Length: 335
Image (cartoon, rainbow, N blue to C red; front, top):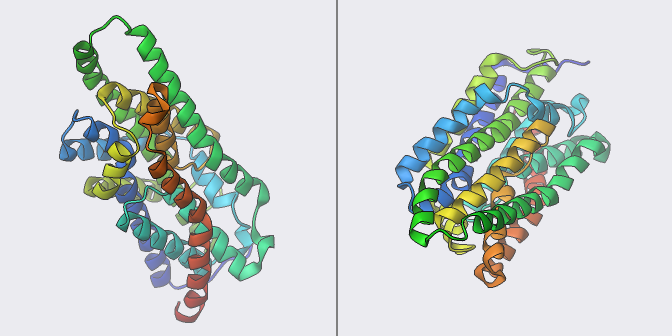
């Protein structure tokens, strides 16, 4: 394999840029993990953020198999086209879309912004032949499957809980599930860290392989630790604009609903990470929240807000890809 020759300064700059994206991923997606537990009043925002950040990092001890990192690093674009310009373009495209959607409070997917960035930069350099169809089809397939699975599991959990606790008083249910939601929110944060940190690991690993600084078998330990630290630190800063959308504007949640949504979302993330699929934590928890609301009654869901979110999902990959292609061209002039 041809080794890309770049200065150590450019390499360091791109690694820092990747970690910045990882930080923003935690910042942008913190709402996914804590929106329900904050909006139901179980935890204060600062406490919820600290808990989410802790479990984001603890995920490094749980998800030893870096299946998602391998999928991003090897199964999206042809490794032969990877160079400093492609990585620069991909990261700029993803960061740009994250900033836009954060500013407007739209819970879009950092994961799909990154995939879109890789696609746009690779196509700008080498055309569509640089894309690995099987890997991208898997990602696109789970754009649909992850929210559907979250919806299904969230609604089934809600129906199951309603059946099991049919004789319990609302006060007892509220008391029990306030405690249970601490567990479900922790598990969701664990799944969030396990899936999302690995995406940045995959990007940095891809760059290190291309420049001859890493083998293709496993990424360096420092990359793994740095990425989990970056996403955890980003989570500490939270994303309050998106918390409001996720926790209250889609449907009104009580602790029992928050527990069901987080549990359904966490199961989906654990399955996806085990399969090595870089799914959207945003899509997953949104689907679960909608499923919980729909299990109560269809009118409990504000479908107009949900529709706006879906449109953001649709535009994420092409928008990030377009900006990435432009950034790739700029990168060839300045790097």
